[in-house]
Image 1 (cartoon, rainbow, N blue to C red):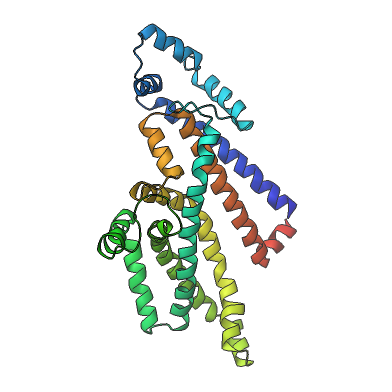
Image 2: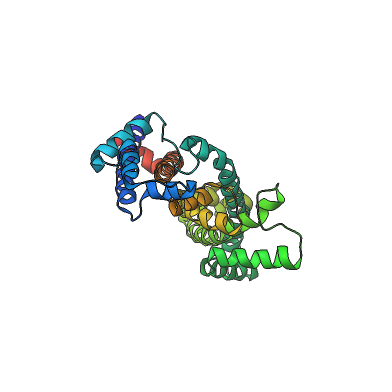
Length: 313
């Protein structure tokens, strides 16, 4: 277990270093001058010589590898500098937006759990029945409809026509419902079909048939044996989907004017706020890698074959 965990942590560190370096280089190579963008916002009249002085003070005249080394040295101390736009510490800017993003992602995952697990299990147990057909239609719909269009449909019906839910801002639990549905419905369709396929495969295995012949109750076969084994690929898929969840959250935050990290980073990109963009990419990478590590560990604990393989190594 210790060796397994250590190897995973080393892999994460290597990936994060590559991610931070590549993103740093690409951001620096992007067109536009962050100094001019910053001064335009402040509406300051300034000469080219003064611009060069500011650029030198910000370290932009150093080679890109030196700039990256300076940034990485500070980033290890969780010092990501100050936002060019607000002059506030980047970490404070991110902390202010983090809660709203976590609320949205939590709401989206709750939608996924509440829909995909019951629908996937019922579709497998009642194969080719009406609920299975309903699950297929839902999966087709969820996989085909883009998030922004689904969000517009929800806004039209629940906010414009029925006037029962707000569609903009961050004002209490009610304002979280439509963004969460927009974020979670498409993923629910994917997970429901994945769980259905895994359940059908497991329920047809010889040991399940043997247990059924021994008189084990059908409810125990479904929830104690089949679901436990079938949930492993779903958990693995969840870890791999976190990047998509973050990307989807950006679209949803823009659509619903949700004051989260996604909306913040889009504004930062538009204004070439390099410290904020770089910190967001690195922290998002750490978040995704950490969740993947938890998923890998849970996969390790759920799958005895993997444990035996690691013990033999």
